[in-house]
Length: 304
Length: 333
Image (cartoon, rainbow over all chains, first blue to last red; front, side, top):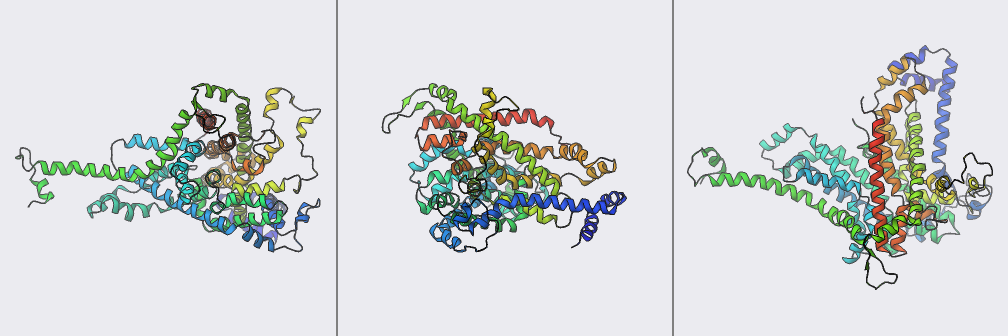
């Protein structure tokens, strides 16, 4: 596409008032140069941002000696595809990824369920100490999970959950997304029109039926946003899985990468291949759920 | 037999006693049922919070009163407040605190500034801008571990791209420094090369998130405000400073508060990129210090005091930010 058409489309797209101002400026050529410059700047920045990912993919296909050479290779001429198979089988990546998936799914579903129930209670039901309990809820946002590890570790040891899935999963339910989620769900439920509640009551709906059939479907966007937030947070957990598991078969992919690097010190390319493998599932998920992702990550940050 | 509805209808002041208790009990029990349902719905959350947040939080204060014996099996000694004062005035703790603060001071503003830069550039109405937005947000898909392995090898002196480049803390050897770094206060805040490497990794990993946040903030800024400023003859630079930035300030404030809390919880990067918070403990952030004390020194009491300190510092920082920064935020639209 020539710069001319880009420029044309550019002004077309710039909409109402922008077009007039843009058009009023003298010099068609100057405008074209400006637009090319914008693309150039964007591209340079994109290259900088993406370079670490690109070089990791390239490095995963090189020989270790090529990576270590003082003249870096930026394009693999004889790609070593076997590194991916090596990382997959020797690095137990299938197992690590499956563990991460299990932990993440249980934590996400658990947090969504718990947060939805609590959010509903705080939004729709009257009960003694409602305000106090809600404030107690919010204070959990001020207590980072990191400062609870000392006792959580001994709790998990005491009940025999060390090195188990439940030990990995249940304490993670208490991390960030829960308190935040209950708050978010309450806010969303409060937006459900009062009329709907009255109509449902006339139809003989009890609270449970109203919650599952009316209220929850109405706040689906918030649920989607919260699930992305919760999913990302659980997937990225590092400290707790490191503390509470010793058995290699229970390691999540985050700890697995550490393991992989430690065991492949002379085969950096395999480590890089493993890193790419660990990165791909999230890229796919994020491309699918881009809209929810943006909503999930910006909930609370931007009003309106 | 009377149905509940009949009973309510029948209820008149001065009715004989036999009819009255039934509806009254029902009305009471409806409120009780609602409260019962409410408690049933919040019990799972409180159970989780109670066991894994509140109990450990409170127990930290108790653990802090006991010194852990040097050899396992010996009874714990009650030392009371002494352990608090010992740990909190120790050089290890103060150094760790400095490292943590320095790390936050580097990563939070730089991360937010880069996020704003990318968001403003990607906010233009250009064809194909969607691809750039995807590129700029792509690092959200990386985890701490992925980012650390990538940068750990990129920056490694043996195999990285920077090999051959002087990676010594050259600023400390600079014979003609711009600021006198030999003043102890300044020197102690100069980050080590290792801490800068960890910071770069962190900034890159969080860049996608920062970009998404700032983009959403920009989208919430009404276009007509920008256009009005443009018609008034404001150049791009002055539009950015006087229109965009103030309108973005609530988002920036949110990012500063949340970003600082996250920065104070940094752990994975340190564990993956550095030799146990080294070299010379220059990357020993508080969270790593807690982990190290707990896992390697097996010193519960000291770790508990450090955890309380982490909480206190986070709390103070957040309150200070609300007190002093929020004033500069313009919430009006």
